Image (cartoon, rainbow, N blue to C red):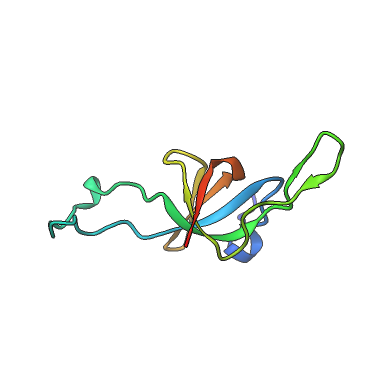
Length: 103
């Protein structure tokens, strides 16, 4: 089996999928208590780094995605597929799993 070298620039999502770089999880609580790695929750906010061409409609046309590269988004907690490239964490998810664009 051949080894495949992946990077952000080599990953191109298909259909209505979006490739998101996960934001860092909180190191402390609001009260200042340091959290161990086992107590940290999976972040639900990230930055869009790649976007697919959009999903096909019933008539064969494409519906363009509502999010674009550089948008900061809030997504469902257990959505998508987690991917680690180097030391960075990403999630590949369907556009329907994105809940909001964060300003």
